[in-house]
Structures are given as structure tokens and as C-alpha cells.
Length: 68
Image (tube, rainbow, N blue to C red; front, top):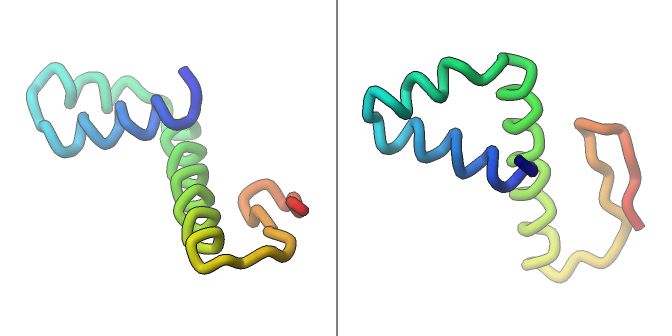
């Protein structure tokens, strides 16, 4: 699975709280859960900056990487 698929999986497991989805959520290692959270935050920041027509460099704080 890639990042967006994991975000959707976790979101659906939280929002649609059926027992099978709760078990899926519990089976995700905490390190993966944390990485998906950081990725989601980066996506939101990136989309916000692009929506506001920001054209400068973007620093991904979770990876310590500068995107031009």
C-alpha cells in the first residue's frame, strides 16, 4: 500500500467503526501509524500552500527535506 491508501484505510477504520475495521486499525504497527500521520500533515500543508498560490520552496519537516 502507498501513503494515500494507508490514510484512507486508517480514516475508514476510525470513521466506520465496525469490529473488523477496528481490528485492522489495531493490527497497524505504531511506527506505521505515526508515519501515516506525518504524511497526512505534509499533504495538508502542501495542498494549503498550493491553494494559496505559494511558489517558493517547501520544507517537509517530517523528513527534513526541502522541495523546490
